[in-house]
Length: 239
Image 1 (cartoon, helix red, strand yellow):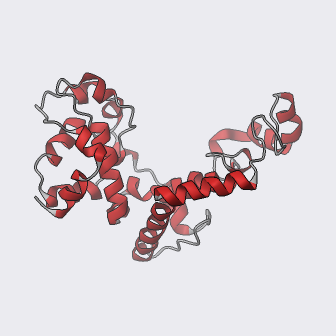
Image 2 (cartoon, rainbow, N blue to C red; image 1 turned 45 degrees about the vertical axis):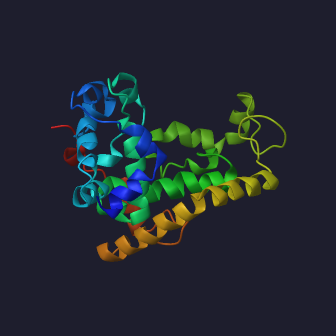
């Protein structure tokens, strides 16, 4: 038993997620991600049960642990009450904390999630804010969306949104007091430290790849654009 397994075993999600896999394959049969990706929850359960640090390290570096949608369908069907989805959550946490997430394409995308969603939560109180969904970042929304953005005040008023207003309603402006409280929650729970860890290891990987990471809010740097746009479908899709 090694230090990586010990760290995994200290995560309550890992402890709750694995009782003893009998290799029946029910989790893989019910898994939506296994229909799309080269991914088998059963294999994950088997690998972590080896308690072999070298095996676990390869998992932390791999694409595999980022395919799970955490729907927990596996939990509902397992005859031994295992939950591979919880095992995945523990593996993802350890991958980020150890910095090994930057060794996979899907893992490196954690930087885009941090800057697109994490920063938005702290800045506006919303995971995705209307003002942030510009076509340069979301081209799939198309020209109609651009028209909606150009006419946002009129359109949002018609659908009952309280855009940038005070009081209740969708898209209302979140008070500074509430934003400060939200940031404090992130600080106390370790969320800010996690964000800093993602930025730190992404900086290291950007230098290794000869790309510019930019500051913690930059969405135009070469490294950010690399992790935000690159998707090697043939590499990830189920064979």
